Image 1 (spheres, rainbow, N blue to C red):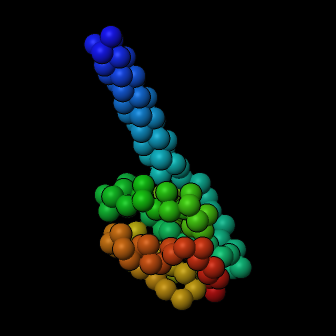
Image 2 (tube, one colour; image 1 turned 180 degrees about the vertical axis):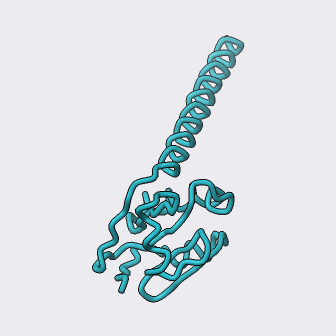
Length: 131
């Protein structure tokens, strides 16, 4: 009887592990797909979002993209701007961009991949207006 119970627990545990692994893989692939989107973005002067300028071909941007994506899912306060979209290149001069990844709020600006700095600029329920 103990053998049957143990065997059943092992099978259920393995099934759960497989489902978790598949879900993680699918989620990872979905976020990678979001990162590669090259939509033209219009930035409203009244936006309350953190501007996240990145390139989907940039290794540093790829390094932090998943973290930024999930922070946005939690706070819904980030506007993703892929600079590989030709229509978004107008923001280079407007926001004086020199490299990516760059985060811009009304009060702050950060270029880099330090995860703690990104958390600071994105913040919890960050209410930021871009001038």
